[in-house]
Image (cartoon, rainbow, N blue to C red; front, side):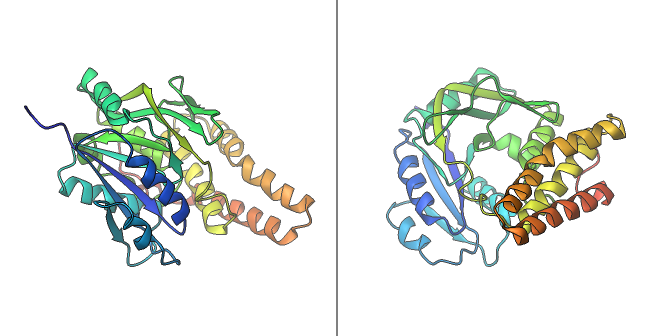
Length: 289
């Protein structure tokens, strides 16, 4: 009897050990015989991750020697997973839990349904049980994203074809960019409604930081300019404005609360992101299609 395909889960930890602990506990409860877990610690300021990982025998811990942020850190995990013989790699946020016990069996069934499928998503709920993602997907930038950004399984062949995340983006919009590149390579997207997990929402990025607001805004501009190039300039600007609006609203809420400094910082981050995103050379961020 042939062994089951090998699934390797990759999660990223950065100063959120309490969530990583919960996530590891939940991942270990998935009922699948050929599964490994890799934790990439992105140069956390705390020193608790070793003690937490040691609670779960077999979990592999790799520490970055400097803070690489999202795309580079996950790509490192992907490289390690593929070097360890992964047939499928589960990329999932560390603020997740309550994976159904049949998670990998259900995902594998979806992959086997069509050999052209390169990535499979599942249902995703918040911690209270509210549906975040289901089979209906969500339209973002004119693209029906049926795969939840909080976690998805990618085949070895798909990862080898696109070489992981676009590291030029650093963080934000990397999920849609990945799907666009998978689609361009001819891979299909799958979805399994037979499995699910819960996501905390914002545990790793909810705190305001100039860098992250800047990168999100910049990458929205870059993405629209690159992938929505057939739109008119006015249509592009309207789409950018509608997606950047949440940061502006947040700045106004800071202002109403009397937090003038953070309001100014956020508006500056948005402004800088818009300028850099709109004026940058796209060839420095994306491969020509």
